[in-house]
Image 1 (cartoon, one colour):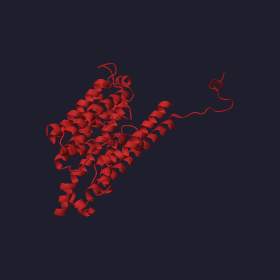
Image 2: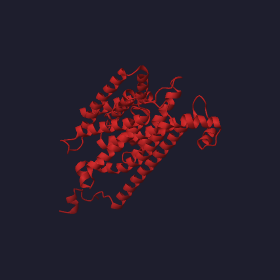
Image 3: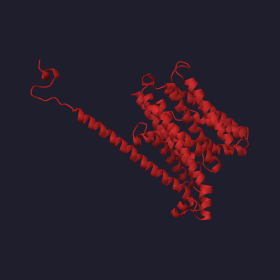
Image 4: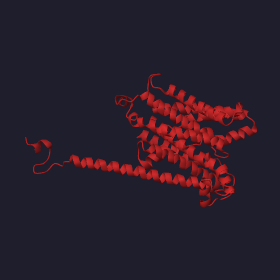
Length: 366
């Protein structure tokens, strides 16, 4: 039997072959296009964040021209303009930038780690844990500032620990299942929100009003005293998150494959969870549980930049852009009274969540 007959090709015809060199060239070309896409999308998102940040600082009852704004940011502007920029608007703009970046990055970390688009901190109960602890701190104990921030961190960490313990497959030595983690988190989050509701009913009218505003997610009244610790926390946690995220490609292969590749699976997973929880706690301590930012940012970044590790910085940029844009809309486009930023993000995120649930149900049916 001839080679042609063994290969199944007709006599006289030439079987198609792919040269190794051309395949390698195609692979390099695809990688080059992917890198260009990631870089271009990152540059566009960064430029949009900068524009939204400058608009947040310049727009208001006292509009500030671009020239005066830039000179004030470097400390060389008129005294009145400098006061408005540095004392009133800059803390709020920086807080919005940091809160959005923290929530966006944390949401992408949770979603990729648990391989579930619903595994967002505000869905699985981590945000509710931070909220319940913070509300307890300033309704029952009258704490504020650093005390509330510490309570939010403790609440988020304690809630995440409880969810991890309950979600382990087959007892303490087992791994985590994404769906089980989400379902347990939703249940615990609902219980914690019930605790928050009870605290509000027992608090004074003034405290209840302040609590309700904070629970909606708001940047109103943010000062340097709250913004500075948030900026420090984000500056430390974001690089740590990006370093810890190097383990994600191997974790996404499954626990057994990741362990075979030499990855300490449990340690890597716990490091990613810890960084994500701390990012959420830092954001919630300042602005409250700004809804749906963590849920939306990761998928949007993945669609823009493509899946993979490169989408994590893009998720932080998407989160920052979403919070800054929502704050602009809440302050200037929805009436004379500035609304909490969480109202606008909720309007954007709720339809996305419904669409995500409908798509998951359709896929399950097929």
